Image (cartoon, rainbow over all chains, first blue to last red; front, side):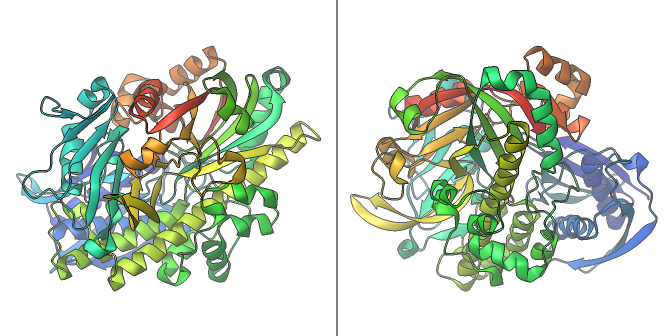
Length: 138
Length: 476
């Protein structure tokens, strides 16, 4: 996966940030930052791919919608995702997430993410391409 | 937070006068030290709430307020449907009806201490916790609909706790406004295996000892005495509540645009109370409340079983069950006249005072019990609702210590081994699903819960009844 994933401070919760050469790469890196809160991703294998499609009227809402769609898919399938691919055009995202079934005996768990919020949500052009960030409720 | 221009309005109460496009004043509660330590975002957010259509009385911050999603966490606001009032997702949040349930075990500290480890192990094994944990109840969508309609009644019907407990649950165990049709199938499917799970983050189950009593008559009414062992459960509506929040954030954002509601912060996404979107959201929140009440009732039933196994013949007794992320239709006085209002409590606990008709008979003379969770290593508190709180904050008080430090900062300061050793030195047995979660929830990462509770007591939002000291903690 291209892009750089990181988290940032928030009073009660956690900010997730993705930076990448394309908007899709930045969204993917933000997704990886979010899942890194839930599980240590070093121990997760991307053996199963799940398609994700979503749309929103603006880029911040699209980021939040993408992150929430990933949370729902992971929860419904009992999975954790570690790698992502996303193409974005005209407010529509088509992507994939790779991961495996969550195994408490093997995976190092962090804390649950309840949902992605619009707090500190920003999707902007940056020197390296794009930056996409928001705060997730844990 | 800037406090120099706040006007004193009573002991531990400060206000910002209505000005500009604010429709009501802002009221802060808590001592000056707490207010000064709040983030500037808290002030910005509560001033924005004061600008929402149909808000009445004041936009109010509890002493534990901190920066939230549109609303501050620890924010209370009431809206009148006849004045164009709105329902806002930020005023409820993602963990609908997250709350606290307290049991008295009927055991003394002397009886429990020698078997504390055994009890902690049994509770940790019986109550699923942590990321991805699943409960023992598997439900299809129709089964989930029953949960959403019947709340704690559903759990009692399935054998989780005795029927007499329902009287001691906020809303008597079920809200009538719930409509499962307004909850998406994704939300229902996400909940299929999550009934009776604790979750993670700041959710916990603790074994505690009543170590100080401030108000003997109220403590006696609640059945609490010095040295009693209690069990406190803190959790919410699990994945279903999270998905309802997610689904309606988009619905209400669109509604705010469609109805041209001047929303100062898009996180305050809202819809008029009487609009189709507003009605749907209120019905979905009711379903989320019932899900949370059922979830805590299931966990309560598991606590009954564990106590019965470890201490044969012993039966815990429910003290009460409170919620702190809700929007409820209640009657309150506005300019001396009773009005039906939609009261949002985001990170705030309903706290009805003595003689409120909604209280169960045993508590009518002393007021509603309120439970304020501390951290893994510090005290929790039992408070009681006051009559003054009705006028000050629509019958509301604080809900917890509130974080003083970000999760990331906590992981920079401590290791899991350090936190476990700290707790061990204080006589607290910890059982946790996540080592990182332990660090993020380190006691030092939270505000001093006693300062918060004292602020609520001084302001008159609630009154102190008893203090609880943890001896074992189960974390997700």
